[in-house]
Image (tube, rainbow, N blue to C red; front, side):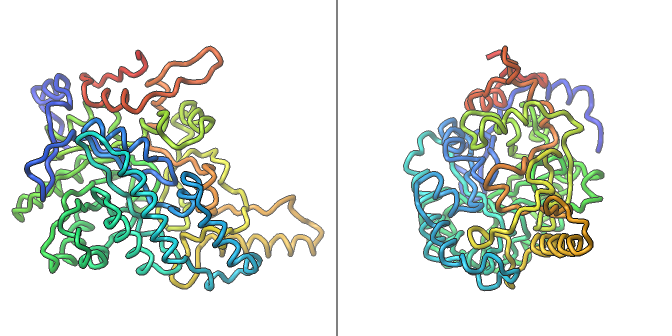
Length: 440
């Protein structure tokens, strides 16, 4: 990465983010605050958080990760209970291939989540849905089609295609009346991934309205190999993609994501590296509008740099960044696919199932040999559905250890939760790499 000149650095430090506006590919007449709050699941990027971003002129996300469970929690539906009752006799069976999601329930849950959010929307900003391809749900194509089209039908402003290449996702939406009108974007971590997506979808005569370029410092799942992320630099990836787009005469705004902790970080990407906006998330995890329980937010505040790790615990196969003392790690939780099962592939398989039943077999063998363990321990994978639902896997960004510097420590040793509006405005108006929310 080339070092900034002294003049460029001085300009970056003295400029705030409010000097810039974001335009989308198919909407050159509208301008938005260039702040996008990422779609953190499960139920971490809540409707309240997305609505705050939209009210302030930016872009907020809700996540459709485990949407049936989220809808049950937020709107008192019974989708998960009904699914569990339907398949309860399969609970002790290692074969989960018979477990299917009811597509009508999935459609209805998506509709409820989106419509309830959009009905409350105010301000000039937008609300997008983050849609993970890796939620394969034992019927990848069918369930993804329902999720995408139901969100469009329910009036979502846009959809961000996440956690996967999404080579077939445009095809699944192409017949929807809003396919050419809603804002559709994709998250990539390399130029190659973007090139594959564009080549596969060129027949639809429709470019993505934006591309989120997510770097190695992001939270949760990463789009890098476990040995590759340490050598990747977001600035380099943004420049490479921006240069290639220009060479192809393609005007698609790039949104830099991963490690953008201050307003100055955001200005740097826009002013010096070719981004049109930024996606941020970590600093919003400890806001009142975030869906994390208060005790988990305090874990984020208390985290030190050494508490943050990238591991391969996710059954998706992607590396994942989280707090190393997340209670869902090594828990040996019995698979609950009858209730959840969001990561079952099209054969009803999930890598956690292999690990869990191997641990069960080992424990049985130890019992025969008079060496039983006190409990089943699964070391290589976690039951991600159950533990994300229960907020027991604490995914986080690289800069989570800096959160304590954004708030005030109270007399009881805990930290003050912040308002999302204050964090948003700190990004928008701060200069010189300052974080001013601790002074509020």
